[in-house]
Length: 393
Image 1 (spheres, rainbow, N blue to C red):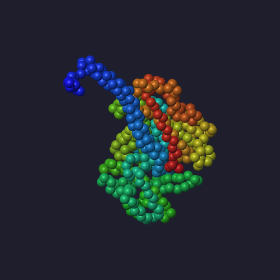
Image 2 (cartoon, rainbow, N blue to C red):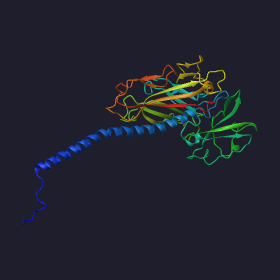
Image 3 (cartoon, helix red, strand yellow):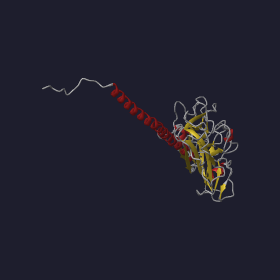
Image 4 (cartoon, rainbow, N blue to C red):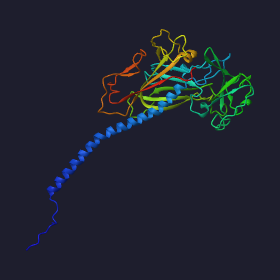
């Protein structure tokens, strides 16, 4: 009886090898095709999430500045007023001696910013990034002594003294008035840990007087006196070569927060990008024009520069009057159109126009046709900031 061999030493035939290789290649091609289709979507989702995170962080900074507009600003001054300087954006300056406006804006500009977008200026003693600008205190009474905490202003910060703007606050007919205290040579004074160390006119002159001290900081060691008795931050959209990421639409720029430098001999500003790929920014202001504007009711809306009023009131507020802004500006709305992710050749926008703003508030609310070739293959998101300023009154 012959033994049958259960295993053979024979290899695969050429036909078997070819069939196996073809099947293997087909599986690889199918897998690669699926991966190729999924990868762009994954990139789009990732870029979208990055955009959303940028938006949350940058726009929260913007919202905070809007809410704090007018903090520490003086509303009254003796004559002659002290002379100060601001930035090269002269159209938004109150210098050399005017009462500062808490909010100043330009509407649908065609130069200096992304064409058709708005420009917004916020003024206040805390509208800066340094620690001193976030500090304040008060001293009441003749010869009073105020000891500051460890996290407050400092007599020596990086070998420089913090400066303070001094104002006296009073209420008259329901309105808070802040009168700037200054000497013929300066509108600020170096901070002193002991309140009693302040000399005339920067210390209260009687027991019933109460002075408020707001921090201002200059990095100029030779001339530490600040250029202005307040800080200032500008917000605008601009397309600067080298600053705009490649993933942005050709029609988009960068939203900047621009902080005024307080050094006397340096009129430069610090431009901080807070949101990439922004196609437009529109500002709408809500006003109370009634005979008693103490409440928060809004009866008229205007564009950023006070034009195109719409609402139930026939009275148009004066955007250039600091008192009108303090007493009647009740609401600030900012609409920002920004990219949500990157370019997607397989995505097409709807023919329905994107409204940058809200219907009925102003005649100049913009409609953008997203089927235009510069917008077509990009997803867009409208960010809304709706803020009631807390420090105008």
